[in-house]
Image (tube, rainbow, N blue to C red; front, side, top):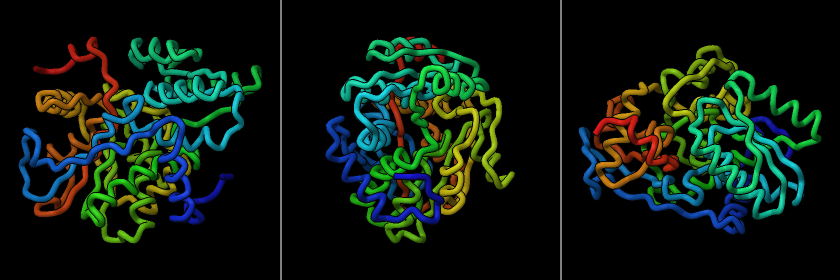
Amino acid sequence: MGEVSADSITVEMLREACGTVRFSPLDVINTPMIPWCQTTLPLKTSGEIHIKLENMQRMGSFKIRGVANQFARRLKGDNFVTMSAGNYGKSFAYACKHYGSKGKVVMPETAPISRSLLIQSLGVEVERAPTTRLMDVVNRCVREDSMTFLHSYDDLDLIAGHASLGFEILEVVPCPDVVVVCCGGGGLLAGVAAAIKLSGCENTKIYGVEPEGACTMYKSFIEKKPVGMDAKSIASGLAPPFAGTLPYELCQKYVEDIVLVTDEEIKSAVSTLYKAGLVVEPSGTAAFAAVTNDKIPDISDKSVVVILSGGNIGKDEFSNFPD
């Protein structure tokens, strides 16, 4: 797929990518979607709420969906570079190993060391840098080492792969009233929103959720253009240096609003989910935190889907969270 505008993306294009993801040799999982009432999680509101468990996905997060579509459309054995706080890098490294490609992941210095070591164990190089310099390092690799840049959120093939999650939601809840999705650079939110809206669910309200300290899409909505910031949050996977251009366009077109949660609300969500038997990383809890802290309007007696986007959290990281 070449570069296109949000207006030119069709449901047929996204369904084609969904087929690629479902039959990918990377073994992407159609993850479970369970009713909230069948868990021990506390719930303040009435309604039919489902939880999509992407924390149970291959490589621990939704990122493998986009990676599967990206690599299916690239030359096998090429030399790739990307930037990632961990989850995309993990799926990227897994795909590089499968396809016999060389790879390098440029990671923010704030990302847990355990994630760097895990990515290195899959056979790709890791270079850590300040968040504001990530693209400088990527550009150096492209210029000096002739590497091909695969973007971790601002890429049409990636976004189309993430749309497969939206189609899976509709297989269980054909026309939900509300869908709540975490947002970092915006790739997942854009893909899910486009899949749902282009499938005919015109009345479905889709909300993105960002940490207060890493709210690039929220600020982009205010400025009416993609913007960056010196993002800082315990949810490192939701703290990119800037919002993606194509994700921003798609979110402007299909997303109702972006809401914010605090790091303390994220920490509490990690603990609450863990007590209910669900291992979810801070970045993966943002949508859940928004619902449990009444950040999403008008969900009483509605059909709601909440995405838990990833479960890559090490034992060492749990000491940061309340009992």
